[in-house]
Length: 239
Image 1 (cartoon, rainbow, N blue to C red):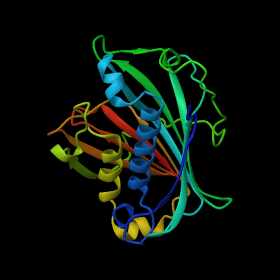
Image 2 (image 1 turned 180 degrees about the horizontal axis):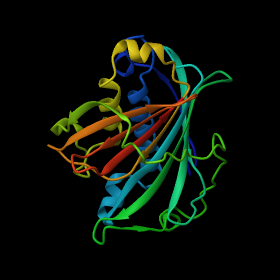
Image 3 (image 1 turned 90 degrees about the vertical axis):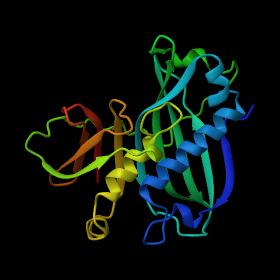
């Protein structure tokens, strides 16, 4: 049984930003693709779960960037799940080159029963005998205070049909594309990101307009995306 997915890859130009390195939103997409590929290999893919009326939900993601790989750079991609706890479980990701860790990531997942719209215990779905390895890093997910009343509203984004995923709501990586496309190149160049933590709070849908808020303290910048009636859909911390 493939407890861990490990394969060599080349960073394609389609996943790189204007600096010619792996983009931030594209890293989220890459990790989601790896999770899907590995889940299929242990018979927990979207198709298999869908037949049981179940659906994977990404709750939070934290990523550490030590060095973003360049266009056409040869790297090794890895992903593996951690032992489930209660209703959720973590999955680790690693982009490495030889013995160098370039990017590390961790996502907290939950499993939704689409009939009852309630979460089920994640430990119920994993195949018996699967060996769980430790997480790529032990740092906890960030706690972001959802108090953005006095924060700077710097952009709005209307959700397009191309942002929608199989579940009928905005895709996780689409939120990151929306956020980073709302920042100028100068803003992005002036802030070298070493770490990002994202909490997916509630789903949003095609046609909704999201307001983007930002606040900065001494060592990090925090963002929120909210619907027009003030409901929070996304909270982000960037170091």
